[in-house]
Amino acid sequence: MRGLGVKAARVAIVVALFAIWEILSRSGIVNPRLLPSASDTLATLGDLLQRASVRKDLAVTATEVVTAFALAVPVGALIGFLIAENRYFADVAKPLLFFAFSIPKSIFLPMFILVFGVGFAQKVGFGFFSTIFIVIMSTTTAVESVKVEHLTVARSYGATPMQTAFRVYLPSMLPVLLEALRISMIFNLTGVILAEMYASRDGIGHQIATWGENFQMKQLLAGVLMIAVIAITFNELVRWVETRCSHWRT
Amino acid sequence: MQPLANITPLKPAGAVEVRNVGQIFKTTTQDVVALEDVSLDVKPGRFVVLVGPSGCGKSTLLMMMAGLRQQTSGTITISGAPIPEPDPNRVGVVFQEASLFPWLTAEENVEFPLALRGVTKSDRRARAQDALKLVGLDGFGKRHPHELSGGMKQRVSIARGLVQDPPVLLMDEPFAALDEQTRMTMGDELLRIWAATGKTVVFVTHSLTEAVYLADEVIVMSPRPGRIVDHLQVSLPRPRTYEMLSGDTFGSLRDRIWRHIRKSA
Image (cartoon, chains in turn orange, cyan):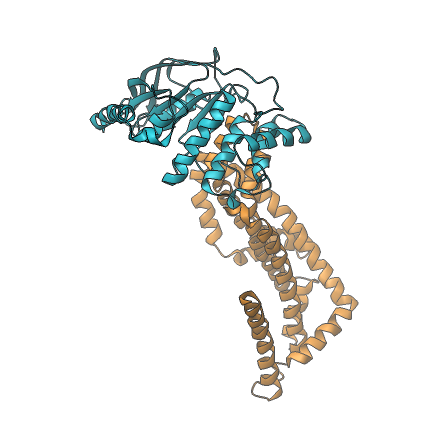
């Protein structure tokens, strides 16, 4: 019963936010030219999704995001694993990684444009760069979450290094890795869209930047909603998998 | 009951021989002597308990018997051969709490040693069932560790240690994390399982009562450096009963161990 109440309250908050948005705009408390009403924005969103050009932009962004992610996650995971497995590497590299992680990645964007030019490689490159540090750091944490007791058990029953990797390391690390995947995607999406907004010929980030520059508030807000929904959907998908193996954490 | 019926033939119990074993841990500042000139004989089928305060090296010695750690000097043989690395065919190990894999069910945990060696799924399942039945967990195979009590988890650990029918079972403070009542019950259960399988058991504990209650022989160790200070034969008849705890024999044995330990503490 309580769970149901909580869910109802959440829905109510979202509905209320949209209602306030609608009222602020319709009543003229906020200039409707600055803040078009929620209903108008949603109508625009439906309209935009019909357009071939917008669909093409979405496809471009999706390709960039998926490519950057597919490169950053395995490479970052491998580096993170090697660092965590070697005491010396860990001691040497960990503080450096923390330094690198603390630098805002956006200041490197002009360099990516200079090196890769404006296009696919620049955005994938920047997405990769924005993501890899968090993947490396999360993987190190995941490796450290493997219990020594479990490794000793595997060793006492004669497990080969391969068996230990797949039967102990991987399942021990999976909950932390899923969490890492989720957070990495947030960084990845941010990186790619930022790169698109900064300098690009296509992609949904580029569109949003253009709408903003041209004062097309309805389209701009619709674009914001679109990306919000995509990001939330991915996030929830991974969270759903996470809860399915929550008992692994014990 | 037919214990471990699917594992035929049942391997005979094994002997453990420890000869002049020493262990030195090197630290940056100094060398710490963890074990010094330790020798002991465990005859096949015996229940031997290593007892002593923390730091006396009893767990270290057990890990050496398991092939998980190598001694600096001396020799250890299991069933007549040295044990340079873990050999699940000769030695089964039961660890302290929290050694079960939380992502596997009870029966998958018991099957784990078999799965490593490519035993077929159906054979594995049958042997795990037998082992779980032996430890009194028939019908709990599909549960995950977090759905089991502390005592039940340790039963699963024992089943896992026995599933390959090793001639020697090594137990490293397996009941240390359990509450007093569960601990007593598990002691009785372990003795029943031991009687049913006839394994050689080497059991490490820091509980004097547990030591005397379970053992044929108690080896008392003292720390800095870790060495054997006494070797007691427990003449109490079997099966052991709760009433024996208040008897004179039990009391004098426990006092004798306590005097050694107090001296070294």
